[in-house]
Image (cartoon, rainbow, N blue to C red; front, side):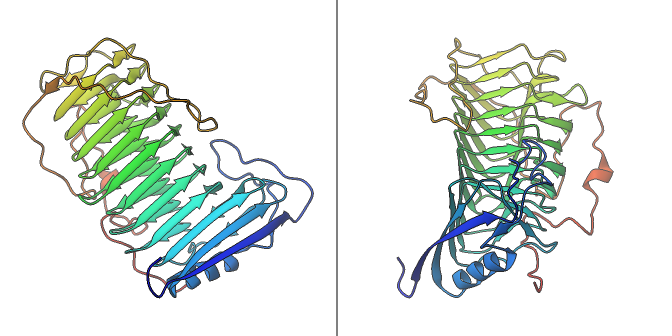
Amino acid sequence: MATGMVAVLAVVTVAPASASARVPERAGGASQAAPACKGVTEATLNQWIRNANAGADVRQVVTARPAGCQVTIGAQGLDQLFGRLTLSTTGGRVILHGGDSIFDVQARAVLSVTGFTLSGATNSAVSTTYSTRTTLSDCTISGNSAFFGGGIANSGGAITINNCLITGNTSQGAGGGIANSGATSTLKVVDSKINANNGLYGAGLYNAAGTITLINTEINENSAQGAAAGFVNSSGTATVISSDISRNIMAIDNAGGFSNAGTLNIINSTVTDNRGTAFFNGGILLVSGSRISGNTGGAPAARSTTAAVAPRRSPTARSPATRPAARAAASPTWTAARSSSSTPRSPATPPANPAAASPTPAAAWSSSAAARSPATPRTSAAR
C-alpha cells in the first residue's frame, strides 16, 4: 500500500425494499421490476468515491439479500473517481442502473468491480482515461449506450475483464460492446462473452491504436451497419487466442467477422457462420491453428493476400458462468500477410469503410452535443 493511503474494508448488507425480485433481462439491462436496495444508495456510492478521492483505499463488500436488487443512478452518473475503489458483491448480484457513465475513471485511478450488473448508462457504463487501471470480474454489462463504446470506453488506460457478459449495448459510432482507443490503451478479455451488441463499426469490439488480447472469449451475434460486426482493429495490435467469432451480422455485404488494418494474430480460434464476408484485411494478419468457414456474403474482401489457415484446432470458448479446465496453448507456427500500412486514425475520425461500394454514413460521425471525444476525458461537472 502506498504511503499515506488508508485501507477501508467494509461489508454492507443489502436487502430489497419488497419481497419480489427478478433477475435482469439478458440483453435489456436491469428489469423494471427489480426492487430498490436497502443499505446502499447512489449517495452511499458517491461517498465511497469521495473517500477514495481523499486518499483512502476504499474496499466495500455488498451483500445482496436476495439477489437482483437495484441502485438507481441519477442522470449525471456517479462522481468521477481519482483514487482507489474496490467493490464486490456476495449473496447475489446487485444492479447499478442509469446515469451518464456509471463509473468515470480518471487519471491514475484504480477501480475493481466484481459481481455487479451495470446497465442503463447513456455515455458508457464504464469510461476510463489515461494512466488508469480497471478490473471487471463476474460482471454483466448490458443495455448501455454511447457514441463511442456503448458498454465500455477505454481511452488510454488498462482494462482487464474476467468472466463477464457484455451484451445488448449500443454505439452510434464505434464499439457497441467495447471501444479501446489510444497508444497507451490496453484491453485484456478472458473467459467472457461479447454478444448481441449493436454499432456502426465494430459492434462487438473496436480497437484504434491500442493493444487488445482476447483469451477463451466469444464474440457472437453482434450487428453492425458500417463495417465488421464482430470487431474492428483499425490500428494497433490485437491477439485472439482460443476464441470464437461467429454468427455476427452485417447490414451490408461487408466483413461480418472482423476488419483489420493493424496487426492481428488469430491463434487456435474459429471464425464461422458470420453474415457478410469472414473478414477484411488491410494490415498484417497472422493465423495459426484456426478455422475460417461457413461465412456468407462472397469471397473475403482484402487488398492483399490473406494468411493461410492451418488445420483446425477447436477453441474452448465457453459461457462466463463456468471456468475452463484448461486453455489451449498458443501455437508457435505463423503465416503472415502484409500490405501497405494504414495511418493510425483518431478515434473521433471514422475508419475507412472496407467496402468501396458502401459509402461511410457521414452523419453518424458528425459532431454531437451529447458525444465527447473518446481521447479527451469529459469535463468534471458539479454533481
